[in-house]
Image 1 (cartoon, rainbow, N blue to C red):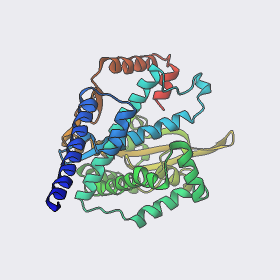
Image 2: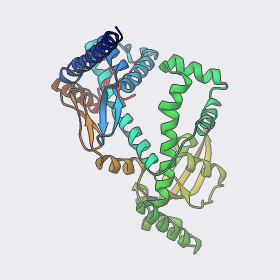
Image 3: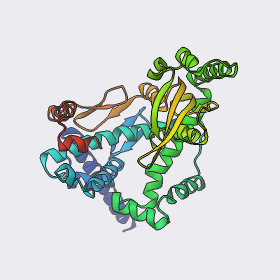
Length: 352
């Protein structure tokens, strides 16, 4: 009897395992082979860890992660009032489904970026602790007044919990901030840019004319005009520039300012208040360095990325292209309408 009992248990175990494997195979064929996306396949991907994107053959972004993010985006748009554009976000129509597919593709690109940032950070020995994440959430919480305010906004807009927010937004942003700061210290282009701006600062210290130095060494279109930028309100400037400009008096110039774009020395030419808005007239000496996005793109080009979803492929240049003709034509038509100045309501929504 005991032997028969053991046989029965092992038989049941193998039978269950065989059924599970069979279901895995069947749903794999349905999802990857035919690209079926319905309630049944969504349930399957919520149970089994099907990959949507594979990175270097080791790391992957799961279908579940992608679907959760797409659901959050859909909820966000369905909760917005687009009456001024003359339509509602109807994702059940043919155009709406295609629009959501474009959003899904954009999300996939962002998820790949976040994963590569996380991989690079881990390889560099960067660790983010729960305490660090809690501190960052506390900073963001102040925007809403209370923790309940933040949690209510997350739930109402995206269907997220606070833990979802930490994992999907806060943690990736923190990895990006730390890696960006490290890049500026070690990247050759940043080191060279720092030397160049220091030489410009030395020339100003030797009483050379600001506009002449800007014409000689500055990057960007403003160099042609001796660094003249024109009038700006403070919310139109990079945060680092705005903070410094606010503290300077007219005809004063700054020390070296580091921004996400490179190095700046600014000069306040004038200040005024127009229609109740404080504005400042600026000139600058600007030395461009490599942005974090450019640095990340180089990383992506050296990584093997495989998109497993039917109708999409990684283009090797930091993006995902549609391979299905109907989606390529849809996207091309929307872009054409937008470029022609007769942007459709749908095109405006796609840009948001």
